[in-house]
Length: 184
Image 1 (spheres, rainbow, N blue to C red):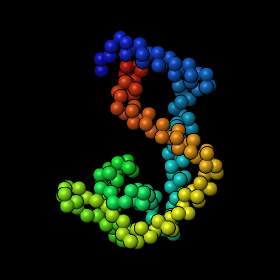
Image 2 (spheres, rainbow, N blue to C red):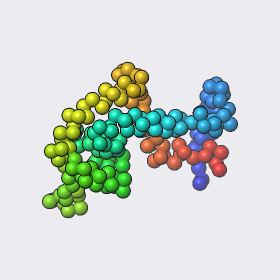
Image 3 (tube, rainbow, N blue to C red):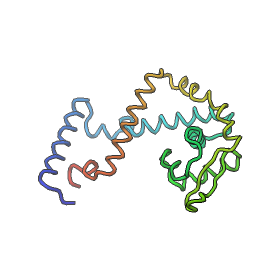
Image 4 (cartoon, rainbow, N blue to C red):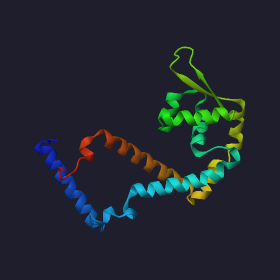
């Protein structure tokens, strides 16, 4: 990949700034390769821990965590096209379709083709799906208790994670951000 002298200078400055920041933090480039220094691993570990907590909290509802997320969107927004549901949950149709099929088999949702556009499938809550919301009302407070954080800390963490998500989404779209600073 050919870059302009200005881009090369920008990347060199960014690499130098990162190296200085790493040194100030007491981390050499080599130490950054340690598993315990990977933010992605910390997030992965937290996500797995959350899955375990949700598994226990959702057991009585008969839902998995991904199914619970689908139900949250439907409880909040009502009838929703599958495409929009996928956008809310950041899931592709290949992942979402089996989830919806299991929820439909469980009698919680029904899928119907749109009369206006047969390519579009809409997801509706059934009576049982709507009623399940009452049982789910205690789940968020139980999850808050399990975190050991207060509500303000959770809000701050969620805000920071939302910012991180936007930054990472932008990084994927900008080849300069992920370019090897050494040009390799």
